[in-house]
Image (cartoon, rainbow, N blue to C red; front, side):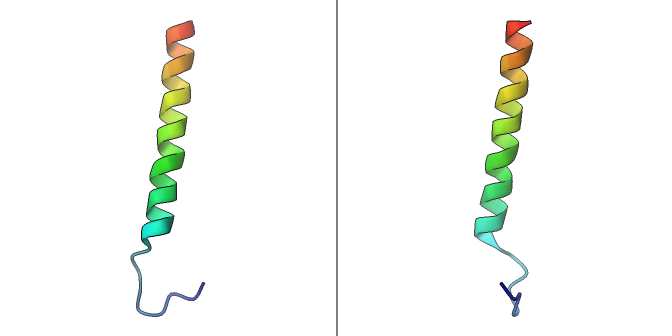
Length: 34
């Protein structure tokens, strides 16, 4: 995808948030099971 005057990419931003959420959830789950 060529960034033609569109520096803000909602799909990319949302996928990053999604991945971070999964990572946080996994870390919290591990801490709770310790």
